Image (cartoon, each protein chain N blue to C red):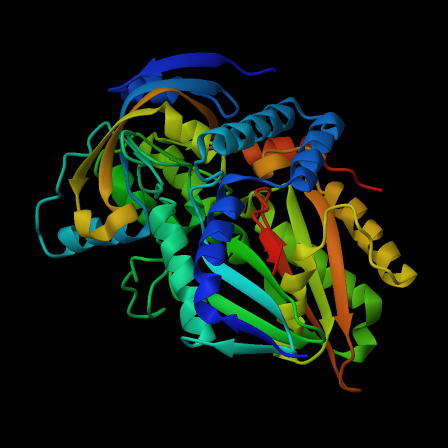
Length: 281
Length: 187
């Protein structure tokens, strides 16, 4: 049974998701920060977390961006295959929504049209859009304004199969330790293992959409997530790298089948201001 | 907390800067100037092409920041420090122009610590991501130069009680190194 939708109806929806993501941290994230404050032993670390929690409350109340770096906008859509679309090209409608959200929401315009020419697009477009066709007739939209501080500290590597899980752990930890305070800890670490390069990095980013505290359904990966979280929090890096026990709020791993010769690993780091908003239409 | 809590008002003096120690908490009031990647690039171009700078940076404090636009009726939007390491290669140039300190976030390269020691400057840490709070501490916001750079223009901010931590002091001590070592767990 086909469901008819117009792409134009996405515009105000995406605009609102951009603003919601930037102004309001989710309950899941606020709880994680509050728990981190309780567990942190460093006085500077505790002060930092307290100020971040107060900042989030202030931002939400005043409808101001929690963080000034309202990022490059990542939009992920799961589109039901029973939907028939009418209207302007889907990607144009999504970008129009981002434009509307960033202009009307007084969000920062942080996108250069060419990475080498570096002239600002002045409306935060284009966004980075990923679309998956899924069974059904619903549309699920995730908006993730991704700030530069954390995004620039991620990494990708091609290990060899002989490196094994120890090699994978080492790459993840090395990437997180090299980031130090620059990615604004306490961070959430998204990891992708397997796939081809494009898939490895995509699933690492999708891993960041999982709620903090949720473990991978497969025990092997759930255990690996907890082990890595513990190792990262032993580093002493702490909130904003100023020393402490709370360097990471969580580690989320996603895996995908891979080539028999391959062991690719991607790490996508999310800062403490986890800005995400989603809707199901 | 072990270190001192100090209230300072601009314009700061070299002596005040030299007295600060890594880990001191400073509440700063007064005028500071914003600059990040693009503005530093232009300052460097001015030097290379023998052009005057758009403002006198002697004894000033630079804040590495690119704020969000102000809603109507507000002085400024959200603002907090950007990652300082990207401006490392401009530190010597800026210290030579007489800047006493820079406000940012995150660790810097080792040679930058040496430069702060050589020129008698400090690196202040503000709180990455506490942008609504810090935005509200900025009482005046005036574009001084390079308006075409949008969020990256050079602006004068008048701040009130902006909370800073001395990240690198003029004796070459790094707050990060000391603190991370303290909280590291080695099995």
